[in-house]
Image (cartoon, rainbow, N blue to C red; front, side, top):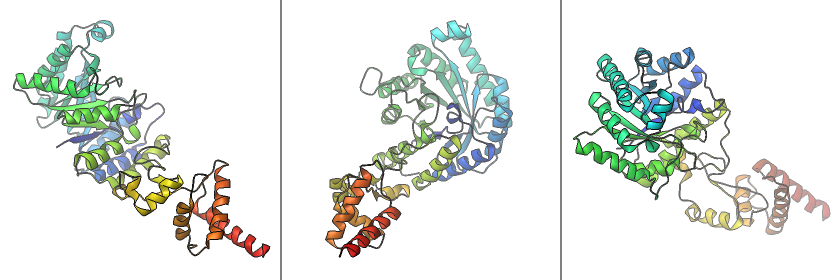
Length: 385
């Protein structure tokens, strides 16, 4: 069974200009728990006193989800996270030769001692604590370094090893395949009779975060990180709604309440200041809106002609846009919705002509405006008789 970790409150706040007030973080966490995510990564308590207070407040909620905190490989960070009462800590430290040599001025063995000492310390404080270790920029680090650090981390008490595609570097079907990487890593653990959970944290720099996450899923990964609206550093990470919908519909992982996603995204969008793109899959305004005449005619008869997802799964409704692309089928559908289904054919043609005229000015005719157009056309017919 795949687990989903939501990082809207941690990775999401690394989006430039995004910060959620404490009461909004609680509201977001409530919705995440209603959606049914398995782990809520509530933040990095060391960053500010306000984040520390928010993580502590969220951890005190009686959620079904595990509440987690982010932590550097420092005992002081671990202490602060534990003081919040979290059940999960994500510890990170790089193992690439280049960064160790130029940034941290350490060799690999020294870095591993630091990592394992912190993991042992955290486990001693709370043996039930779930500990994730992430080699930063995992997929671009030397594979042998990743294996050595990950193995020693597991032996020190880490429950989860996270493969971080920190720069969105991986590409399915190439020699940078996440499927191949996860398979190789699992093989290395199996050789040593180790079986930690493996997580993936995929960034979206190439627009391939979801594809890489699904590649990892196929390879048998245990946890996938995501965030509402795909928020995060630069181009962000895997979009939560897209991930959950695909896992539900296409991989039969039917454990989530997808009908809560619209409320979640509206809340996150409002308080992050990041609008939901109209053409965004699943949660965008146009995701279930049909426009072109041929499409609307077929979809009004059988929606599956031009849909592969049922909007009802998301608690949404399909709509038919009225603009310059509209045909008589979409107009008739809309006329029923405004109680004008008895309009005769001649008037319908006059109405669709006006609708197209408005559409050519770059606007969509909504139902209230359609009613005004119908009234005007009726009036014109009466006046000219």
